[in-house]
Image (cartoon, rainbow, N blue to C red; front, side, top):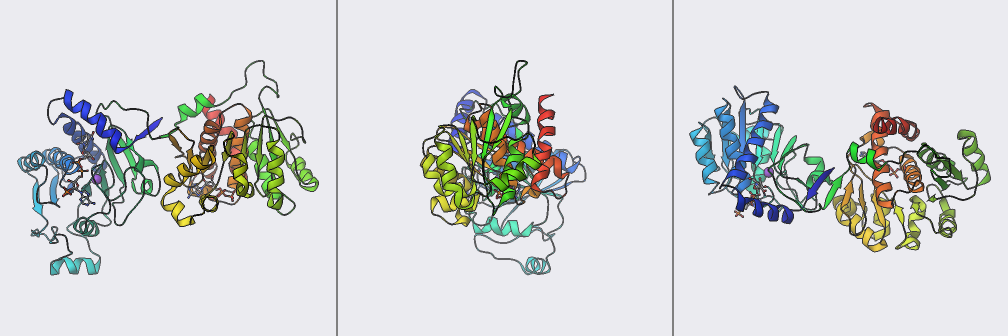
Length: 488
Ligand SMILES: NC(=O)C1=CN([C@@H]2O[C@H](COP(=O)(O)OP(=O)(O)OC[C@H]3O[C@@H](n4cnc5c(N)ncnc54)[C@H](OP(=O)(O)O)[C@@H]3O)[C@@H](O)[C@H]2O)[C@@H](O)CC1
Ligand SMILES: Nc1ncnc2c1ncn2[C@@H]1O[C@H](COP(=O)(O)OP(=O)(O)O)[C@@H](O)[C@H]1O
Ligand SMILES: [K+]
């Protein structure tokens, strides 16, 4: 499991550890982990050219100490100091190792330094460089030690100006990409877009939650020995999914494995029925029932001969392509008093499932409608809004997107990190609803069914895509292979 903690949790754990360790030991652990990640990226120290962006706090200290390690390994290391006072021990260490330190207002002879101090005050040479789009004397990598968990967005103008200067050079963020909101994953103005983020002790929320996650790059965790409480956020890994997956016991028959019922599709949208059933019929449950328009029922039977009609089930999937039949379908399903997936058209009636065991599966637009906010606001603050919806409906909410989020009151939000942008294709959500319904029918809780289903769905998309385009049916067809790879 990947776990992410809040700044407050990290600070508390850090305090305990700092009291037990010699002064500076924690920062040394962090700096060495950072230096090794940069060395990996450079393929060694000698000949490498490293630029450090250094803020006033310990984040800058990490960068300076790591810079000293890199300089001792033969790299040219230049530090741009963005504050009057930077970490004194780190600055000394870099100097002693042969690194070059420049203050903001001291342009370097090579033109690599710059001359802003709060307001953008560029030298004529730098202005010319910016106008022509050329970079300061080329560095192989920039290390962003501007701010870490002590930063409060938005970034100051001088830091933003420095970032503009180094645009296009590979960027390694120290702990967090500077300028993002660490605890919410929200953006507010200019920020670092990292290729790699080297973080310490635990992941932070911004590494997993969009939009900030998109700017964290590959996140490398350095263990510094923090003892941490229950996380704010978690991301299932293959072992976690394997442990949660149902597998038939030797005495199983189709009913003990669970039966999932699908009430989706309509004469207007028959495809939604076919795709919901395709997801439900991935083989995880013992049987699939379909209930709907007779003509659609025929289409379902033709495509999935093993699917049967109305009868007893252990979970319902309701809403995809249900059109104006959504409310009736939801009401009828609710009379069975069973866990259910509420998707698409049925989400408009989500208040009917308040407090019941259910998985609501909105995308950003649907969640915006449910909460009465703009879609853009949901996209800018997905964690905030999915938590709010879970509290409002007192049930499990899966907000679909690049990194889908599963929220339930009192539990860590689960983030799905599997998937590919090729999964953004019509009908993919219908397949997902079916898969989650099948998992509910096998007895998984809504929280586990939503997060495991979302993980499998993303992994199946990646497997089916192989880097190329896919359609929703491909995802459903790839699900058994992904399940098999986990249960072997
Ligand atoms: N916790 C751990 O376990 C470990 C933590 N470690 C490291 O310590 C880091 C935390 O260090 P930290 O507490 O010194 O804060 P940090 O992130 O450097 O930033 C604070 C400074 O930034 C400034 N500043 C603020 N907002 C700004 C803005 N918008 N734009 C520009 N500047 C802004 C503000 O300056 P001021 O306002 O005072 O001028 C303030 O002084 C952590 O991320 C990790 O790297 C590891 O070494 C070991 C293990
Ligand atoms: N950029 C993206 N990267 C990865 N997955 C995505 C992206 N955008 C959407 N998805 C996933 O694709 C699926 C789309 O579902 P949905 O929006 O309901 O589509 P539809 O209504 O057409 O079925 C969801 O599982 C979502 O998480
Ligand atoms: K940083």
